[in-house]
Length: 121
Length: 324
Image 1: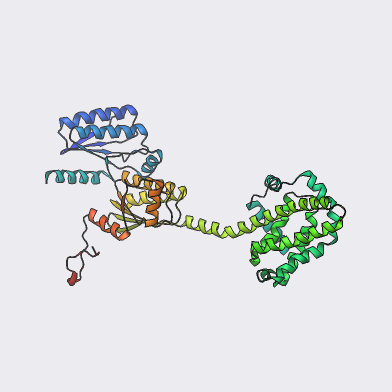
Image 2 (image 1 turned 120 degrees about the vertical axis):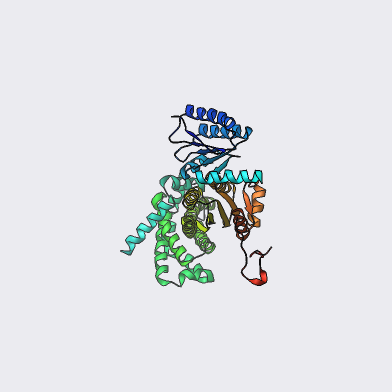
């Protein structure tokens, strides 16, 4: 199932609704890399609230999305990591170093806005 | 009735100490007991049995003769019981069977010594007196063959050291029971996660951190972050006495997990000793946001959340509540 990507002002929101196959993840990566340029976005929010597992491939893909977006001028925030998922990731040694995380979509949007305000002001 | 209870408590102790056939076999090997020795001990059996009461008296007379021994000898009932046990001990010492049952019988005396608080060094000294008088009796019994008598006595001495080993272990085990219970209690301490202000949590950690507890702490912290929508957590480790690489790793995991949920963690309360030992061990905690004490950590957290604490006292108008 492809991931819907919504555009909200200068921010792209990728809202993951169900467990993703590796293929879906790669498609999401390519899609976002393309859209960041097309919409001249300044931020990307990846919402993983619905996921109850984040394996190493998913983590790696999210990391590469973040770095790609950064190179094209957009900041990425991963939001909605569940407590169990966070614990499992730590146990498995998976990290999202250098990538912003936030509690939920609202927090993530607030964080991007704060960043934008910093940059402008 | 009391005998039944006593019997079972000795058995429980034997089980807790893992006093199995194998471990008793190992103990026999440690003191170097050989088949030769059993034959030698059988040879002096009659000599010992003839004077069991005398040998037991040597032991108790020594105890009543010194200050430290009177904790036992002042208690008439317990002394009677101890004397009885000591007699059966002496009989069993030359009995030839040194299996698990033999070791288990020694525990009752050990428990008794432990209960009255008889110091091990005093027990060992008294036991030494007893052995010396046995030695004298053995030597006297065969004046024509002193070397033989000496060898027999040395064989018996192996049993004596076997007994000392069991008794010392049992007394130490009993004494450490308190420590074990306290450690369990510390481990069971709950770890509250407290909301200090909106979006600010305080996590005071007290006691021993092991894998199990670290998991509980992380779990309750992550749930609290979600429930309170926290952005900043102050983790205070003042109450953690020692931090080694394992504990440091647990703390790192907790911090990383909180970060994944969008909350930043400020670690406070690393004492000078802990900090120095971390440096000495080469444990790198520089990726953590550490601040000296809880007060400093709270100030930092409030700043990060955009709070400014102002004194209502006009004399200190506008000054931050905390000094400095």
